[in-house]
Amino acid sequence: MGIFGGKKPAIGLDIGSSAIKVAELKETKKGYQLVNFGMVSIPPEVIVDGAIMNTGAIVDAIRTLLAERKIKTKDVVTSVSGQSVMIRKITMPAMSAEQLDEQIHWEAAQYIPFEISDVNLDFQILNPGDAEGNMEVLLVAAKKEIINDYTSVLTEAGLVPAVIDVDAFSLQNMYEVNYPVMENEVIALVNVGASLINIVVVRGGQYTFSRDISMGGNLFTEEIQKQLSVGYEDAELLKKGGSGKGDTEEVMRKEVDMVIREVSEQIASEVARSLDFYSAAAPADAHINKIWLCGGSCRISGLAEAISKNQNLPVEILDPFRSIERNPKHFDPAYLEEIGPQAGIAIGLALRRAGDK
Image (cartoon, rainbow, N blue to C red; front, side, top):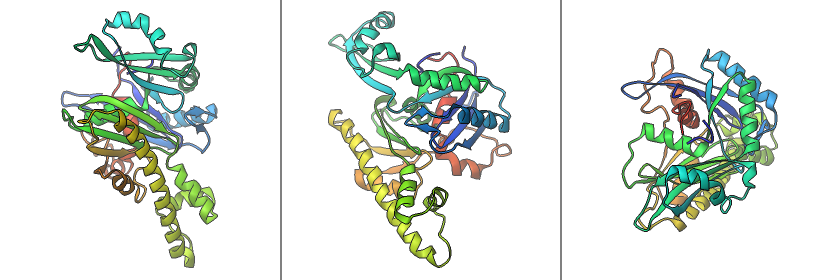
């Protein structure tokens, strides 16, 4: 599902708040093959709440990444999320896609907290009609301002924006290519980024709910900085399991572990609030069976356990490369395993094709 659109291959470019990831896939008779994958870090505060604060830094990072990976493909699919994007399921009288196209603007005005003239709208019919003559429609609105910011960055980097997707749909697409879809199974995909957590609930392969939370791995870094009086680089190192210096090492590790535990519980509570919101409106037979984690911060020590304990559900780390063929001569398997969870959205985007709806 894209906010605008050819079925030619495109690269998937995930512009995150701490790193930019690029993925290129080739469709084969057996499924998908990894052609290219790479990532590059970007400085803090370049992207805040999904909004680009420093265009030049992003353009430079994209150009560097494409040059390093020797990527020649110009068509690109990227995605947006956060407060400038709204996804809602609505019920309407059954009608054709053509009729809906004419009416959707009027209908959307009731549901969208933004001015209709300020957004790009898209829709997908989920259920064409029930016994009462109603249909279920997935409505997506993204502020034109954020779409324009992302497209101009891509254009400036020498790329051709083919599809602007939404993080939630990219995660769902990535999951369904890699894992079997069970008819009535309800799963929650939780993508823990540096400053944003995307949550998507999928039932039997159909989108049912999503929410973005404005927090993520940066919260661990900030709390370590604050409570241990260390700089940003040291806090990042300690967050990832690095150690302090000399005699203070053991004491510092204990303090860091305590901070990580506190923040993990805070994130688990926020995830729980979103999932409770889903559960409150879900039918009795649509309780979540399992939670899958991905994103650059999902492997932080104790986070998966905190979410599992809070929800009393199994929690597992997703592998976005699980069913994707890759040549070990071109891609180090150990590297792909290490960075795998960070690749979720980029792989989901790379599954899209120019001209997709």
